View (tube, rainbow, N blue to C red):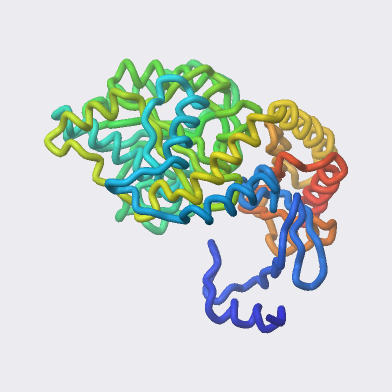
Amino acid sequence: MDPDELIALDREHVWHPYAPMPATQRPLVVSSASGVRLRLADGGELVDGMSSWWAAIHGYAHPALDAAVREQVGRMSHVMFGGLTHEPAVRLARTLVDITPGPLRHVFFCDSGSVSVEVAIKMCLQYHRSLGRPAKRRMLTWRGGYHGDTFHPMSVTDPDGGMHSLWRGVLPEQLFVPMPPVEYDPAYVAELDETLRRHRDEVAGIIVEPVVQGAGGMRFHSPRYLNALRELADEHDVLLVFDEIATGFGRTGALFAADHAGVTPDVMCIGKALTGGYLSMGATLCVPRVAQGISRGETPVLAHGPTFMGNPLAAAVANASIELLLSGDWAGTVTGIEAGLIHGLAPARGRAGVLDVRVLGAIGVVQLDHDVDMAAATKAAVEHGVWLRPFRDLVYTMPPYITADDDLERICAAVLAAAEVA
């Protein structure tokens, strides 16, 4: 199809994420992708600095992942998971149990990260209902978080800065404490403790993004808060949920962000990089006491069953992606990217309009003291041959792990250029 015709049809019919209908900005047409490069219909080429919203950790058209998809398509692409099972899903569940913190033993597959958070919250509420505590129906979280776009995930996302303020009064009203300070602060932990004491009879669980708050603002905080949350959850008889959708599979320099603190949550949500960016899939893991508590209730089943739950095609490529990750020196690779980002983004420090520059693992962030001019920032990055997707006051990058040094330098130059004009 002619690119101009395609854009015209796109404008007429396609509603893009976080955009009006019709869109006010013209999207770029991608015709193919391989490695870290997006090839455009106009003949141009961009280095992907976003891993397709943090999912394509191995880049595009990776031979091992392509082969896994082709082989599974030859067997079956999908079969319902109710009453049936299959090897790709069972293998994946076993692998996830092996690589996540030890006590997480049970895996509930779903079809996206947001839905994995829905399932996690449902687990928390149903666990307490099954134990005769129906009043424990609220979640506690800290501000600055982002957990997805479906309704319960929206309710635990920052109520002011999380894009969901439109739904105030419609969403369940959850409990929010201030966002965590960067460094560990005992006074902040005391505030968490006091909030839980006041609301002990109505809080079912605590949900946070561990170490890195993603789309809510790309903020980092001390892993010691995870240890404190674990202690508080146990003391106040609430469940602890870690949303590792963005942080899982090595992005922060640990396989899972919980590993920075050696802490096991009661429930863990994963998605994004689970399939290496090939297909949509999420999972919610829990410890045995959560599953056993729900199973002892008047309604002994978790009433949730997505049509594409445990999809064999997604499970097969997830198995291949995890095997590919673990078979290489992923930790050394991420450490190398971290060093490159620290060096490459350093010139932004002290620039006019720059509030902060921060790097953790394969995450590099330049925070401005004003909202980004999206069109200008995107144009500047594209002119440097890089695809970035700034938002709010942030120009940031989460490159694929296969990004070579010269491409990482190009990405950093593009971030600097985008921040300069934003």
